[in-house]
Length: 149
Image (cartoon, rainbow, N blue to C red; front, side, top):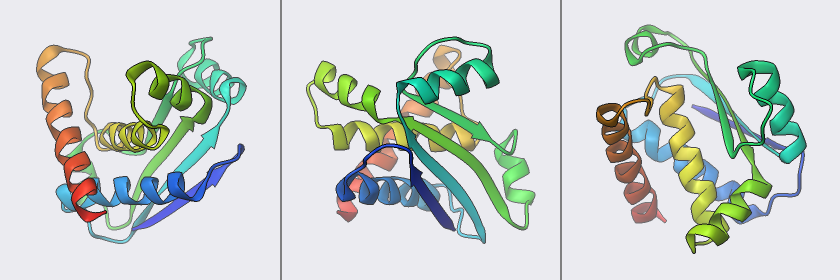
């Protein structure tokens, strides 16, 4: 799987490496080893607000947006070439949330990447049951990523 990372803002090499590791952890857990790609873009507050407004009708800054290409994991498993979708991460919000939660920016970037990957795979957190299932997946991926570091 190709992991295409680009940035409209300055991103350090450690953050880029973490993104790669986070994506790989999710792909490994979900047994997605076929040909394909996922793209990640780092942006600022203004860019993510514009994307949020255009695509979700929400005129607000957010930490991350996910744009999946498939509706369900079943659809993904049927595909010959996995074009999973796009993840847009607001690096400024990552820094704010890291300070708020008392952990590193790198930990926040890794978590948001994992969280977004699960959105690309059809998971959501709109109700307590779905939220619990998604959180368990995220925790497992984060633990695997840390083991491999």
